[in-house]
Amino acid sequence: MSAGERVIVGLSGGVDSAVAASRLLEAGYRVEALFMKNWEDDDDAEYCAAEDDYRMACEVAATLEIPLHKANFAEDYRQRVFAHFLREYEAGRTPNPDILCNREIKFRSFLDHARALGARWIATGHYARVRHHPAYSELCLAADANKDQTYFLHTLTQEQLRPALFPLGDIPKQQVRERARELGLPNHARKDSTGICFIGERRFRDFLAQYLNAAEGEMRTPEGQVVGRHQGLMFYTLGQRQGLGIGGVDGFAEAPWYVVDKDLKHNALVVAQDPQHPRLMSPTLSTEPVHWIHQRPAPGEPLRARLRHRQPLQDCRIETLTPAGTTVVFDSPQRAATPGQSIAFYRGDVCLGGAVIATRTTMDHGAGAIQSASP
Image 1 (cartoon, one colour):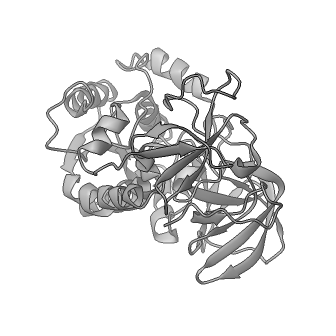
Image 2: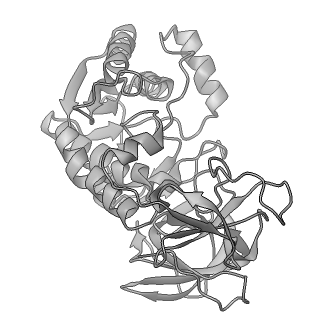
């Protein structure tokens, strides 16, 4: 890559993408920006702030004196991301739409659009690094370990990674905020977005209920004692503490309750008061087919992995590897290994790829006991 080449930055209205654009300008690239609209037919301005985001993106582009394009990928998002999201929840699993959104929208629809505009490179405000070698590219951990987002990018292909730039990969978030203030960017103090990718921050249970029918059922302890009622298995995830609504239960201490399993066959939510309950702890798990960005590890090779964003990397090894998936063995049992979520694998600072978690083993009847939460 060389300065002077044309790059299109995904400009969201947030501070990260704004500073990413400014760093590319400083490096000498010919920078343009693209605002992506990916969610429609939602009139609830409290949660869907696309127009506010677009206005802010326009102000940022004007401040940086770069052209701003606008594209609508809402249909792509509904077909490639949201439909899968709903199917997974309907099956009792807990998907991660941000991972699929990166693969299908930010590094497919956006990439195709940028190429149609004549750009060689695309860039985003992700906290990650990419090493471009002559024959391949590697996805690498960001310098800011607390903000590293390689977990969300582990499904990218070489075709998607080769034209990608991550200008924030080598600096901490605090420095991003400081740089935004120095540049006089209008969004330097704007809070980071959370919530479902492109859908916004909203009451998740109410949102999901608009699309799926929830079946109420019993909350039971691992021993089978009924301690409450749940509003639908799709509204809960392993390890969850908040929102269970379990009050004082005779014979139990006044202590928090946690989701430790889902019994799909009997539509029961399994709960316990121990945050490290053996039913919640997994020494091994199995996955769906694994995506490797470039190199695949050898069976038994010591690796590290994470099962969720910001989780410290965990020592593990891949015991078996077939086209159907892999079996992962951890040095220490993992809490809340959730079917439908993903696991990303690392060698050193390189993210090798990852897979969707299919099933897990638990510790409640010994390491060999399997409690499957998959459909």
